Image (tube, rainbow, N blue to C red; front, side):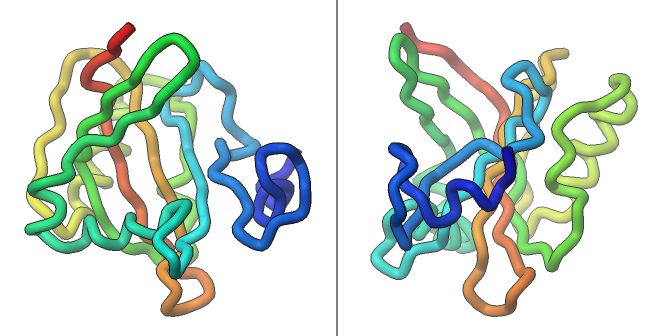
Length: 152
């Protein structure tokens, strides 16, 4: 019901300092942008390695994100990596039309610290990964990625 629910609970709902990786409470599963949150853990668990994507050499070797579901694997290609400080922009999940969606993509690419490609295929199926940077209270590392392939 809120994004606070799994900040300090595991996937079973039990208290846990590490929390869970979870889909934003405002998301519906058919939204164009599924927003996924996780803690930036010092032991590199959860989203503890996302900040590595800020380095070009790491990103070059790790440009795909895989989400394993019960009966399929979703492969996403990263198209934007940046740090933001408390703005709501990255957390937009639904778009009223193609123009609004394309503006979101263009703005995300413009914010990226790397020059990456977005593979336009007419589909609106992206994810946004978000984790704290550990530097200031509201700073977040944001990773945007586009669905590239589904393996059954």
